[in-house]
Length: 90
Image 1 (tube, helix red, strand yellow):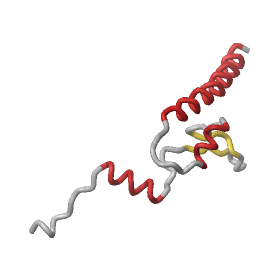
Image 2 (image 1 turned 90 degrees about the vertical axis):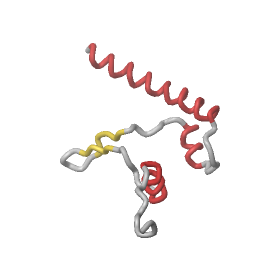
Image 3 (image 1 turned 45 degrees about the vertical axis):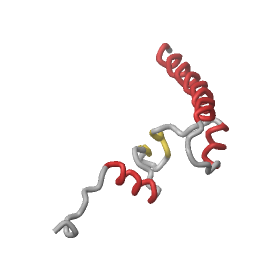
Image 4 (image 1 turned 90 degrees about the horizontal axis):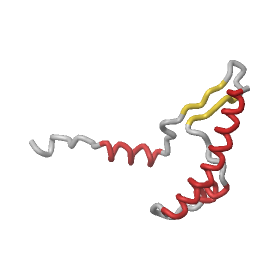
């Protein structure tokens, strides 16, 4: 009877299956009626370090490199936030 019973898949196993199939999950892309691109969520990373990190296929997470990427991305985010506040005040 034990061989007939199937094990229930865990959330971790399901996540690994999705990663193997290379699905893009938790993303949202908005287009106008004309088919023009409006926005994407989550926003695409703009830093050059992030692009270089995507191409690098080393295993594991390099915390120092990730920290540098986040600091560089933070600069872009602050700049966009400033623009948004200036538009709001106008």
